[in-house]
Length: 357
Image (cartoon, rainbow, N blue to C red; front, side, top):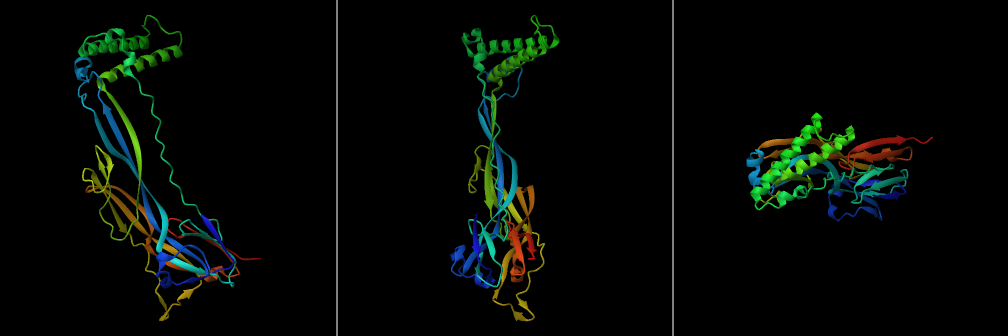
C-alpha cells in the first residue's frame, strides 16, 4: 500500500470523463493531482481435495483364509474426493472506474491511501488492510511402520508366501491372546503398576496393527488445497468452476475425465435504481467536487455438482451495484472528513467528520 499526500482536495472528473481512455490511467500522482480506481469484486474459492491411496499387503490373498477378513483388495488404488469448499471475496482495480482527482486549494489538506493496483482505500484515515488468506497447513503424518521388523525368524525362514502368511497369522493370534490375559490380570508376568501395563499393551497393539497390515494393506490420506478465483458478471449461469476426477484429482476445465462442478450467480436486485443523471430537467455538471464510491449489490452464488445443488453463498459485489458521488462539501475547510472503504467492494466502511474547534 502506498499513500499520496495531497496539499488540497479535490475536483473529481465526471463519470463520463472517467470512462474515456481508462485503460491508460496510471494510478498515483499526476501533474493535475491524482488518479484512483474503484474495485470490482472477485470471488475466491478454497477447495480441499482428499487423496486416498491404498497399497495391498504382502499377504492380502490369504486374509480370508487365516484372519477371516473379507473384501480385502489385492490391487492398489488411488481415489480423490471433495471434502470442503469455502468462498471469500477480494477487490481488484476496475479499469472502467478510474477517476482523476485535481488539487483544489479551497479544501482541507487530504491524505489518500491507495492499494498497489491503484484502488482507493481511504481518505484522511488508516486504510483497512485486505484480509490475507490463511495458508493451509496439513496435519503432520505419523511415521510409517515397517511391519517386516516384527516378523519372527521362523516366518522369515519359511519357504513360501503361503507358509509365511500362516505363521504370521498365528503370531497375530498369540499377540491378541497376550493382550486379553493382561487385561484380565491372568498373564504369567503381570506388570508392577498401571504405567507398565499401559506400555506393554501399547507395544502389543503396535505389533498387532503392523502385522495385520501385511494382510489388510495400508491406506494413506493426503489433503490438497486449491484456490480458484472468479470475477462474477451478470448472466453467469452454469459455468464450469472446476472438474474433479476420482482417479486424477482436480483437472483442467476442458478435461472430460473430471466430473464438472458449476457456478451460477444470481443478482438479488436489492438496490433501488441509481440516481438520475439530470436534476430539475437540466443535465448535471460535468465536473463535481467529491469522491466516488461504490454502492454494491447483493448476489447469491450457487455451486452445483452436475444437476445437484452442492452449496450456496451470499455476498456483496461492486459490479452488481452502481457508483455514487460523495459531495465535496464533506471535504471543505470547515471539517476534517475521514473516509474508509471496503477493499473488496469499494463501499463505505466508515465515514465521519471532525469539526475544528
